[in-house]
Length: 255
Length: 255
Image (cartoon, rainbow over all chains, first blue to last red):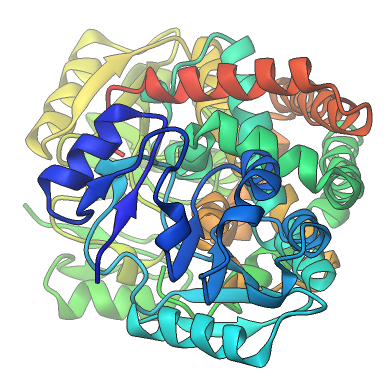
């Protein structure tokens, strides 16, 4: 394989070159992308969507175009509109942590992770098969899902937890508390608040129609808890905390 | 040292006996507590406060009475009122995780942890010195702090993060999401939601006057984030997420 790479951060490009993971760096015009068999967009959702129109006329040779974004409706729609829906399969690996950039990469990052694959309306079966083979070779388990269904699913599984941690971090910051002052539980609860801001602004805006109602449902739970405390409602508090404990214990994954 | 122990859960008592950590189990009347030099209450805040009046007349020989509760005003006041303020020093070790009971114990649990010590108004200097020596022998670092100041401090450092995780778990549960379905970030953000419900009901009620306003401040941040999404206010979203990221990066502790 001959891997070409581009990143707006020269440190990431230099790291990937030095580690021998990419053979050559592309320049910002992406000159050379015409020869690619496989193109992977690994950048914030909004930027990936903007790139589609620029790249679409130049990837005539590609068998598969995929991405790593956390939302899927907009990129699927953009590829379909740009005429590359036939070779596009959206990808969303459920892995990684709050870090980003080349230094956060590691061998085996995708091993045993779940990757959602979202074909476009016109995706050809051969492109989908290639996407599945690509991810399996990296050790991941793939699940094929409609882009709209995907975006609702990740609202709850990923975006709401992220923005809950963000809100908690902001409330603590306003109260003058540093993260170093937190106990171990507070550090767990705010770990993902350190995730890349650009990436999350793009995700949140792109999936706002799903996220806003989820945040409203979350506010309701916070308000109910506060109200139970203000009324010293022991029964309601017990009900809420026991429900939480049993939900947590239903988790069959380690820790 | 001759360590006597009691727990309402016979499994915990049997485990501590089998591991040779306690020499003898007390019965529910706590018969034998009269001979103790040091008494440690390790039970939910409300239960510890209730126990004080029962135990106070029987600990004439003790040099130190301490506890491990997460709130300190009520236990300090109860000990002072029961006439054992002179030998009481409240203790709050900032360690452990979402698990509880004997099986969650381990050698070195308190090593390198911070323990807040809250004397009562009439605590004798010798009792405070003994409490400091006790915790240092377990490898902990002690910080002496007024009980009212302590309860405000832990509101932000511990109780708000806990109840934010509880609220998030409840919202996810209502949406039909199991914890096993979460990505790695969601699992981090909800880990402490599995903490002991009885313990947290007691903490929340005991510190409700501090926690309710903190929850209200948290609701404000969630609502502002939702409002920015509903208005597609890119500038506000960026401001909030960049503030969060820089708050997180100010953390000098690992991970």
